[in-house]
Image (cartoon, rainbow over all chains, first blue to last red; front, side):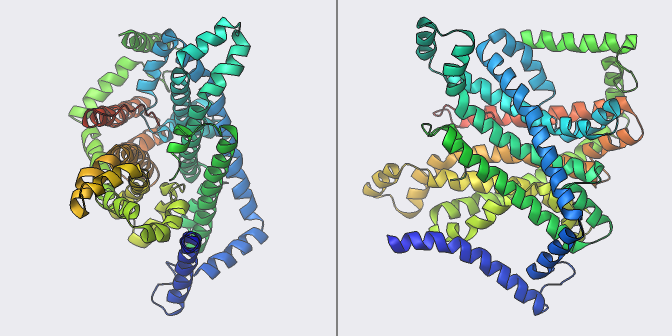
Length: 261
Length: 248
């Protein structure tokens, strides 16, 4: 049993380290072409160099700032609309056409429209990145509200919970697991669109770094950018899971079910 | 029904505001103008070939991802050592937006369909692998033990118990994977490819052809809607015994 657990711990780490070692060796032995697959040590060197020359931190900061802004732009109205449409059938019917018309289109395609109407600047990019996650969060929140046991709500109303107290003590905790699923999926989608937006229209940010490296064929910079985006993705999702576990420890359901097994 | 009325009302309002000039018709041409452009472009223009290019890329990307992802996910679910070895790569690469791989793919494979399709395919692949092996590892052990005690081994165990039990999760993975592949394919077209609906929207942006842009958006919307709603319906019919309420 102990052995099995130790293997469960060690194998993934050995697997990663092993691949990096083989990669490093294969480049040295000229099995992999260095111009296409620079060795991990070379990528690391390039990263420290980019960091020292001052460019890298700015790219990371720009992407993180946009990610946070876009997520907030999606999450706050998303939860509000979700609660509303979860509670009222009329609100749901009014919201449905937007879901049918706007949600199915990959939101990167709204960038031209947003850029034309709002002009240059950060707002159109953040807004475009927020569209799809807004819908994901609103739909999940509404689902969460409707998942709340009816007698629970009725009992709360019966005992005098109305307005804000009903919201704080019953609706929000009840819907929270679903809201968190919406947040988690929404964050992932925000990151996808953000990287694409940065690739086409930004000077700063990890997506912009990738695109600029492509234009001048700096393969090492590209790997640095990819490694940082992957790290950002892992940090966001695992950090989010940790928060979700603290917030809804009682819930084993959907907040967990889309987590990686 | 109410939704249809609300939708039509919104279109009517848009038409009025655009005609009156409250909405800048340069950016928001009236829906009737968009409709006329859509019909003209679809019958005589290049809308149909661009839509075909997008659909071809999407089906290639999704087909390859499903062919690789489902068997690999099943194998990872059933073989623990394989899971332990591959898990760190899945964990590291799943949250990475695959559109970020496009520049590298274009260097490795050249600027062409291989790189474009592969970027979309990788997006779907990780989602499919993850949901498939999640579906296998989350099977109630009691089910497997019962099957075992009744003599199900090997292929019978796989076909009668493992596969049906994992199927809901596999189908969810395929559905989410297809949706994500559409997002990446459109992004690839928007950034790098010279054909497809994503490129059409990009070109309309550069030439300020708003009616053409909305026409392309409408076609993408229909494709997207068919994917999200259509597959959800299909999933519900295939898994009639299961109640699925998933929106993500």
